[in-house]
Length: 440
Image 1 (cartoon, rainbow, N blue to C red):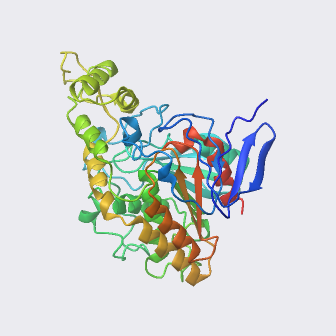
Image 2 (cartoon, helix red, strand yellow):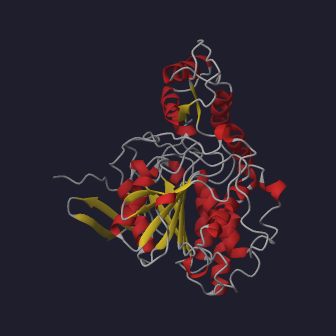
Image 3 (spheres, rainbow, N blue to C red):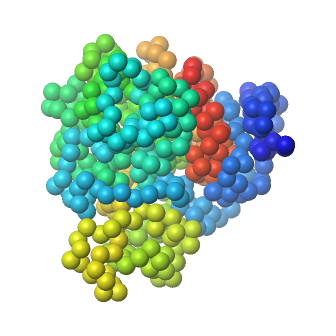
């Protein structure tokens, strides 16, 4: 039986791993690049990608220099699980007045999913917490598969799967900050109640911090890792950066009321900079959808025929629908009921507009510098998808420069032979990266 994974090489200092029937076979790569051009485009070649576990990557964008159309542009910034099932929000229509103490969340333990009310972390079985954050327009189900695999492989871990604000069942206004006496609440990084309601990446990350505090995952029980895809990766980095650089967090690591920075921060194909113009086009198209929409078929027809959205994106949007709450309303066809989206468009628009304000590369440099100064083993794992063409030479050069300026274990650069949805296109490669990080 032939290997299911194609060989793809990279330049210098690299370890290349091929996964086939016989497992992972490692070899040292020479000072040259060999790129596979097969299966270009996000989502192509699902399940046939090669994991390129590397500490040195460059010029990824040379693989596919093209004008990206349809879902290949859109997928750089959205969560993209075609198996996502929508579910009801605890706050009808994401009312800005409905705020809770925690983001909506679930747990995955030993590969099994538990509702928040059916699982209590702690107790007799001490497990380390790993947070998983979905991408824009997604929900906490998007990264279930890698979380299930990781917790099944290692029973010492459990996964905390969160809906970010305005997504899934979390309210659009975010959550009530944990406590005025919180060790982090006095920091300028954690904003006032009014400012906290604004849909920014920083506030989304603060929601995660306050949720962790409310769940008493502090001190020695602080999460040891956070994994975020796309927009969720931006939030994961902000979470990591806030805890690394805020106040005296690093001095107070023995205090049981403080959330300590995670040992590992995995950022899955979160590309620095602004969103592509095609993403704005899709958001505008979604904003123009008449709500309630009568059926999934009507949504696809409206987006493709009236708004010039690709069929792939239109069909994916049908996975983000739920029954409309207001049964007294009529659809455009005159029928009662219909569907609405599971996400809040004002939140999606707000965080998308906030993308240019986040200097991801500077934040990464800050985090690794603090880890160096504190002599604490904390690592950022930057996972890049080679098939999107979104990673420019300049971006990768700067990441390699940051890596070379610090200890090797502060920043890991991993390139997967996959489209933007790395957890679908190259799940095995992603799992190798996760296991290699958390098993250290």
